[in-house]
Image (cartoon, rainbow, N blue to C red; front, side):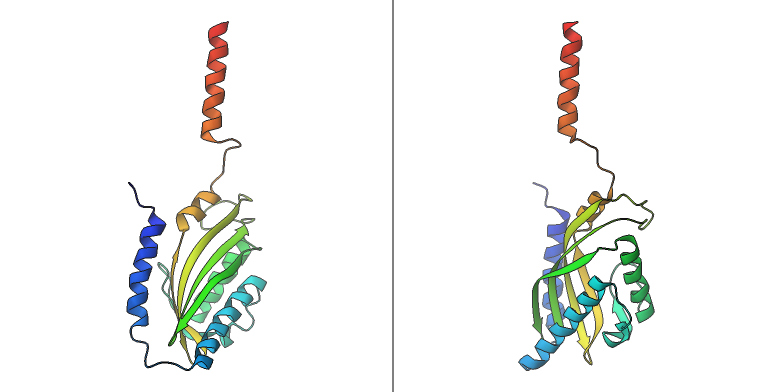
Length: 185
């Protein structure tokens, strides 16, 4: 039995979580934990609205996004977010679960939108995407300082590729039907 890549990545994120949450100092007051969740919610809201004018109030200047190949810095994340919104103007991040401890906030979210412009070398398809992601943020001084993510990028990629008008099975059935008609003639 083949285990889906997303399941493996999610399991690795759980292991990472145990390591990332480990250094959390003594029990943090609930008000700090709620403030940490609020800054993550504010970040998601800014992204959903496509308003990055107050990003410097939400993320640190040296924000470290631990995505593959991502350099640190607010200018990098601003450019990244603007690029996502340019390709998927209706892209939204919907928080499904949010948990916090110490200076860490974990979010399970749903990502959805429509690709109307080119993205990462893929020509605009007009396809809708809808997939899940798991994020961990480290908060420092009331701002997002670091970010780790595991997302179902395989589903995202598959949803961006041009889809045939019918499924492979339907096409197969039509081929069988047409060959039967040919045999009758």
